[in-house]
Amino acid sequence: MVDGRALAAIDEDAWQLLEEEVAKVRPRAGGLFERQAVVVGPGVRGARTAALLPALGPGDSFRLFTDPNEAYRWVDPTDGPGAQALVDELVASIAMGSIEVAVRTWIGDHLRSGDLERCARALGLSSRSLQRKLGAAGLSFRSLLAEERSRAARALLLAGDAKVESVARAVGCSSSSQLGVLLRRAGLPAPSAMRARKV
Image (cartoon, rainbow, N blue to C red):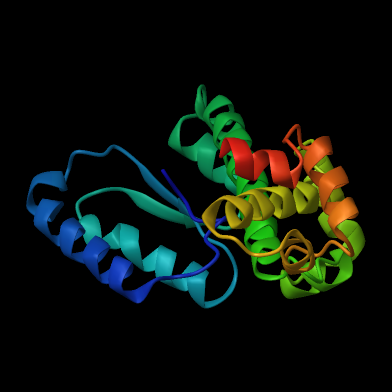
């Protein structure tokens, strides 16, 4: 079973490596599989995914599907639907993790001007969609922004001797007192105490 619905992009070098590895196992893989199914997404990426399975060899029974329910049932009428449920759960879990990583990365690059609407636009989403995705993962943009700002502030305070006011501005706080509040809410010491204790 190859489920390519979640394929978001194709790294050409990785794809070439995959094709080379498939070519190596092709002589041994022919005839090993009773049934092979590929679920393809739309567009060029779907066509690329569809091209992979036949490369394993013409002796195996394979089919291409656009409907995942049909594909999983065809591969195994008894256990296919259960396997599909597990794959769907895993894909959803990975998607939630990737949205968190994407948002944290964007925030890290925009600490001073962290803004939900700008972040959503950069990720190709509406503000509401981004909030919904984060909410499904038990997160919020505001909490991620605070975490990334406090993490960056801690690193700057421990790494150098920049004035606290400069560190505050660098991470998007309007004043050193606002920075102190941010750090306290994150469970961290005040800037001066942090530098003194190097924590």
